[in-house]
Image 1: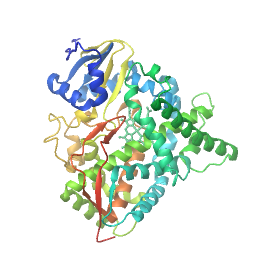
Image 2: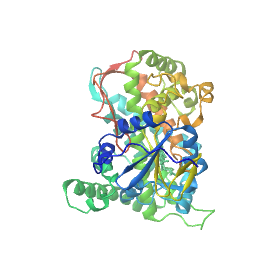
Image 3: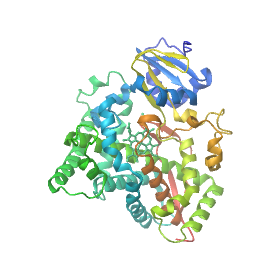
Image 4: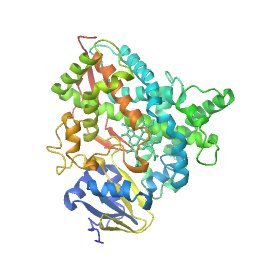
Length: 446
Ligand code: HEM
């Protein structure tokens, strides 16, 4: 086994932690540029290994997944998410995944399509020609209402800002979770930790309220929450989920299911506004497939060009910009020795822009996602939804939602970019720093 090259060292304590907290992307990009496929460095006492080759991504997430757990950053987020799918491990994870899986079955997702389109239709009715707005904020509101409706069968209209700001308070705390001492910070009653506690209480109130009401009525409303409440573990002990488990899953799905898709859509509008040729092809596809009619689940396979646009947008701006894993043992990862307790990090942001696998990586070019083009490059050069047993359970949901929301809104509206110097900010997801301001233009169809 080869020893991993040792990357930069610093005599200033926690210098790398500060750089990672402030903006991890330039730091990690520099490491990949200087060291190539793999490098190790330290943040305080923690050894981190940055892996940067598709073969090593496969080893980490698929072949050798048993030797790894989710990293401590994610473990620390249990304070928010509890033992939900994203954070649980081993047998508990397997059981929860088996119980939740039917809610993400293709047939089930198809049933959500109408709700997705209806919500986008309401948004496009609200918009006015020539108005300027922050498209990131708009997409967050829209995907929050989609998740609330499909997951809880709940209307959040009017409450979006309250729930949205509670979720934002939780997400804003993310950089703190990178800090190994965050366990202690959380106990100090400073404004940010108080805001954080208030936000959890706010969301718990909503979630437990809905769970209690639904348990009492025993009704199957056909949404994700019903699926979770009614799930019976046939292969396991036959028991369903406790209220606490359902709460943890609901909180996880709420957070994981709205922020990511909102970012993917916001970045897509940003790119379309700058690439009129691609925007025209989107319009041509909509004309051909939909004309003036609202899209349905049945149209989804024929809107393949829109899916390619989203895929290319998630290449350049992957909403999940990195995955990390804690080595439970000494591991031989493709011939490299990963020591026990090291954290291995693989970054979609880096891999998706690596010139070894992408020609002119900075260029926005949806034709990279034709079936032929996909086969011509290593599979794990693109992994926006992760891979292996912990692959995103919402992937099918996200593709359907992304394509249908984009189709419904683009049918009526085009966007002109007003913001200058839009930059990605790597928080828990890859958000546009400061939002994306656009001016709306009604299409001739509208
Ligand atoms: C564009 C949208 C989305 C992206 C880019 C995305 C990305 C990801 C990634 C990369 C992972 C794996 C993390 C890891 O391996 O450490 C993941 C896991 C997960 N995602 Fe998504 N996601 C998206 C949408 C959704 C939606 C819509 C839902 C639910 C409605 C969802 C729910 C989850 C859950 C529950 C997990 C944990 C799965 C497990 O560990 O078994 N995601 N997602």
